[in-house]
Amino acid sequence: MNSLTIAAITFGIIFIAELPDKTALASLVLGTRYRASWVFTGIAAAFAVHVGLALVAGRLLALLPHRWVEGVVGVLFVGGALMLLFGHEEDEEGVERKPRAATFWPVATTGFLTVLVAEFGDLTQIMTANLAAKYDDPAAVGIGSWLALCAVAGVAIVGGQKLMKHVPLKLITRIAAAVMLVMAGVSITQAVVG
Figure 1 (cartoon, rainbow, N blue to C red):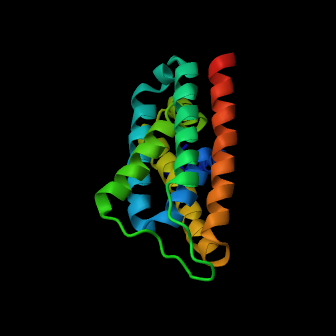
Figure 2: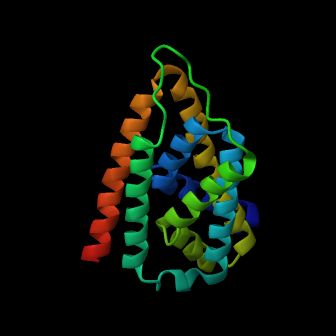
């Protein structure tokens, strides 16, 4: 099988697996709050690190204590939900709100760290490692995986920007916080139950 075919297969598998993932939600929320290109830069860099780890140490990732990873992710989701609910200024009714003005590095770093921690040991990272082992073409698998992850994040960020034009930010924030609390509950339950 040639490298282009392997990259395309990897892209399709990882794209579908990542769509319902927590990173899409995090990308959407960050995209409503900050400049989209800065958020995307941080998220894309984090995905590059994850794909690199999956390619280099794929089999070892499955051996890490999954309970600890889930526990940390759960706590981070609770923190994120609390920041969404209590860490923003009130919106004026009827006034279109632009994403917060911030500088590049804090925004990109927020996107990077959010994805770096949330995606550690994630299904798509393990799938990338397995695909790299199966096809014995790490470059094609890495490119296909990274492009798929970036595509999902891009769709979510653009979706967040468009959504903000039609739905009040306060409602988006409350829904996102509720979803994050549900995800936190799932992660913490998995950490406790195993």
